[in-house]
Amino acid sequence: MTSQNLVEQALSLSKSDGCIVIAGESTSANLRWATNTLTTNGVMRSRSITVISTVGTGTGVASGAVSRTAVSSDELEALVRASEETARSNGAADDAQPLVAGGAASDWDAAPSETSIEVFSSVAPALGDAFDAARSAGRLLYGFVEHEVDTYYLGSSTGLRLRHVQPQGHIGITGKVADDLSRSAWVGQATRDFSDVSVESLDASLAQRLEWSARKVSLEPGRYDTVLPPTAVADLMIYAYWNMGARSAFEGRTVFSRPGAGTRVGERLTPHPVTLRSDASFPGLESAPFVLAQASSGTSSVFDNGLALEPTDWIRDGELRALMQTRHSAGITGLPVTPMIGNLVMEVGGASGGLDALVGGVERGLLLTCLWYIREVDPQTLLLTGLTRDGVYLVEGGEVVGAVNNFRFNESPVDLLSRFSGASETGAAFSREWGDYFHRTAMPALRVPDFNMSSVSPAS
Image (cartoon, rainbow, N blue to C red):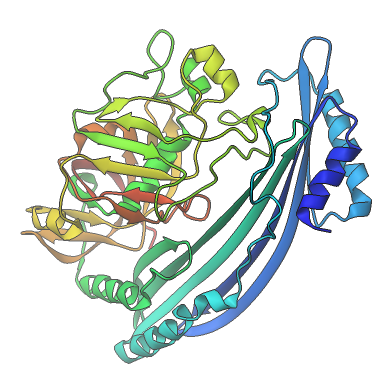
């Protein structure tokens, strides 16, 4: 049975006041390697279905969402009944809204898109070459590459029929020195189809970083003039994005809350011409152009399923312009409806050059390539803590002169936006910490004159 038929059959079985069905078809392919040797590869296929029922409670509308994988036609009715029972057992939903209406998209009848191991046709031979080069140079390579294509079909009792295909992939490589395993470095990249991935270039970056680590320097904790590559900036800005829920801000619970009451929308967050935006059609970072919500949360609502997503500037020229809004939270805050979008782009007006230019301007400081184990300390300031990993380097006279010990850091990404002293052009960035969950980011590198390394970490 096709996914479209599953959607239609589930809708026809519904006895609730309203019903939304989301069917997903996914294929993925992967390669994994260790110590310069391919260890595993595989191709997987899966199907999922979510049924969301809405029922009147007398005082409002309740919703119930139930998801299952590998559901056959015979199991559909039980799934629909379960979602209806869940809705009836819930109280009236505070995010209840009329279901989005509409017709069938022109591609509704199209089959799911798929990936296969062939997506690695250029990557696999290049990895073999990299393994040979690593053996010759006394390096060890470890890593994982994955490509996934998800096709979603969304249907509702209001007539809406929408389809979205999401290809996404990433590669991450950790390099170590064979006779000194404490010397390690990491590089990674996200992609839609691997046509833009150069394993040779990634391996060259690893080799350079491992060469830097031949000299080890011990440094005390403190505030350092620090350059963050786009990958590390993405680590921080994704966390800030996930905390841009309008309702939480309106209720005074986040860094985007105005003291007293309301949100900071309209307030200048930084004197720099920073723009943080999302656009589902951004070239290379394309994401779903409509809301796909399998459960309600602080930043999404199942009632908004199918709602079209418009390009949104979260920050424009340094001013907070929008927060993540469902239709319900927009009614509370009095601000426009601006739902979460599946990509994030940061740009600094007038910025030029790349990472090397920023490093070249540092008299004595750090190049910090990877952040890890990032956790929130204070939601009111969005103070984060975490560890450095696989690459903190000492910069002297504009050149990297060695690797330093790892640190625990304490910083707020919102505070950094007002403190940075230099920025590069924006480029694709793959977060080391959050890339598995949020692939599609483009960031500049930033130079922060007083990045807070709060303590030395024994981790290596």
